[in-house]
Every structure is written in structure tokens, then in C-alpha cells.
Image 1 (cartoon, helix red, strand yellow):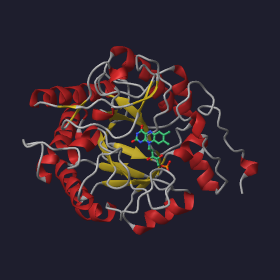
Image 2 (cartoon, protein in one colour):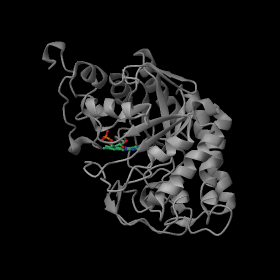
Image 3 (spheres, helix red, strand yellow):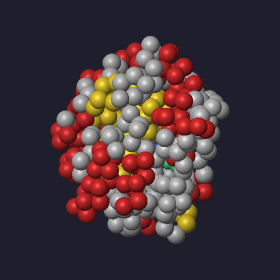
Image 4 (spheres, rainbow, N blue to C red):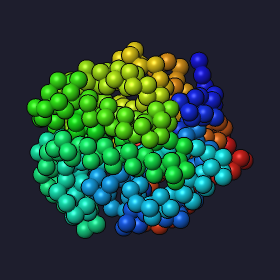
Length: 362
Ligand SMILES: Cc1cc2nc3c(=O)[nH]c(=O)nc-3n(C[C@H](O)[C@H](O)[C@H](O)COP(=O)(O)O)c2cc1C
């Protein structure tokens, strides 16, 4: 059985260990969604991760609704990412860009336009905006022409990611955003080729994979899914069947890795009583599976031993412990992430978490 410290290959990516940094929105870009200099420090501090999956990054103005989150559709954004990616590489790390279209979860006041989704639905919860929390606008159902345009946006963003120096991309298919809105029958009410039976609801995800892979190569294309747990109102009547079929579709496309957010019943981030779908997905998928949510060193190692996961991604532990890989190796205590500064501006709670000196090891 592999340990967390064994190398692993995922398509074109050669990772020196299996302790990965999960994607984490931190809101430190500027209002034009251009990365700022402090982001280079933050990511470089965490470059010992086997792989850094970047914070969710908008593929278009239409698709990005999180205040001060970065994008990858403009020249200025590409230029802004270059020093961030270069800093990670200079520190010996690897980083892929998480490509994001938020669909109906985009607040109209942030994008300046009515949000789009698979169907005309409204997100259930208030949304973060530059002016506090606001009620969502009902989304407009995308036309087939819109879908072609959005696929072109994914392709352009993937191309831009490579131009900025990223080692690959991860399609954000999780947490109730646009890809997920197409996957689930609670938000996809379409009666055309993109809706109805599971094979049709998988079509948009497949199209996005092909659009992205057409630019960067399938060997640099991964995806994140969240088969169980809260997904911001995007629900399905049968997650187990849907996501097992999704894994089979990703197998057929040759996608080299899938990251899964599968919170357990005691999770401190959107807990779920539902049974994990990952074992069934493992049965139909031969690529690498990365599991996420609530892992610490020992539980991550135990999970690898079960044979479903090839690697583990850590979110909040990587916020508070830039030297997480070293701490797990030395079994040193972990610091706790400060919720109040998750999305605040500036270095506090961002680049000022300490690394733990050797002599403090347990
Ligand atoms: C501050 C914060 C920001 C997050 N941003 C993203 C994101 O941009 N993309 C994403 O897929 N998940 C995002 N998540 C979910 C995390 O990737 C991860 O699934 C979650 O933190 C649970 O893992 P953990 O227990 O290791 O923290 C975010 C979570 C937190 C706490």
C-alpha cells in the first residue's frame, strides 16, 4: 500500500507526494479578477504539496460571481497569474488552475448580467457580493448557442492557464456550480439532449472535458466532483447512480484524475449522512482518485490503505499550516484555520500562518 509520501503520476503530472492542496477561494485578487502579488507568496509557501489545486478561477465575467476571486479570461489576468505560478515553480512546486463557471450562483450585482444555468431556477441561499449578502436572481436557461459559447470560454481559459504557466487544469464540477447544475435532476429540467436521462445530463460535463482537453491535452485535465453533501441547492434523486455513471464517462474520456469532496456525517464543512459513492466510482474508473474533506495525517494514511484513494487533498489544514507536508511527516501538531480571515483582504490569515520549527515537533 502506498504511503502519503510515495510519488504518484496523474497523466502528465508527476507528484512527489500524495498530500495535495485542495482548491480554496480566498478573495485576494482585485476587482477586475486579476491576481495580486500577495497570492504568489501564499502559494509559494505551500509549494511542498504534491500538487496545488488553485482557488476557483472564473472562465468568464458571466461565470464569476465571488468578490475578489481571480479569473482567466483577460490578458491582464494571465499576466497576473504568471508570477504566482512562477513563484510556485521556483519553490519546487506544481500547480493546476481550477476552472469555474458558477452558473446560477453568480450574483447579478457582481457580473452585471442575469445568471445562466441548465434551466430557469433560482439558488436557494443568499449570495456573497461586494455589498454584503444578496438574494439570487432567477437564472435564465442556456440555449444551445449559449452552450457553444460557454464551451469556447472554457477552452480559452484552459489555453490561458497554460499560457500563464500552470501545469494543467481542474474543471470545477462540484459544489452546485454550473457543471453540477447540469448533472443533477433537481436543477437540470431540460428536455433536449442536455437533460432528462443520466446519459444526457452527463453531456455538458463531457463537452467541457473535451473543450478543455482539446487545448491542454487530456493528460493535463482533471475534474472535481462532490457526489454527496450539500451542494448549494443542486440536488439529485439518485447521487450514487449519477456519479458512478459520471466516473464511467470520465474513464471513457481518459481523464487521468478525479478529486472528490465526500464529507462524512461529522464533517465540519457541509456534513453528509449519505454513503460515499467513491467505492462504486473506483470500480468503473482506472485513473487516480483524490479524496477530500476533514482528513488529518493519520486518517489520510488510513484512507489510502483502503484502496479507493490514490491521494488526499487538504483544504483548511493547508490554510493554517503552510508546511503541512512536513508537519504530517513529523507528526507535529496542526494549527487551526481562522474562519474570519478566509475571504478577507490582505495578508492577515493568509500569508502570516507560521511554519513550525523542527524543535517543536511532537
Ligand atoms: C475558505 C474555503 C474556500 C473554498 N474554496 C473552494 C474552491 O474555490 N473550490 C472548491 O472546489 N472548493 C472550495 N472549498 C472546499 C474545499 O476545497 C474543501 O472541500 C473543504 O475545505 C473540505 O476539506 P478540508 O476538510 O480539508 O478543509 C473551499 C473551502 C473553504 C473552507
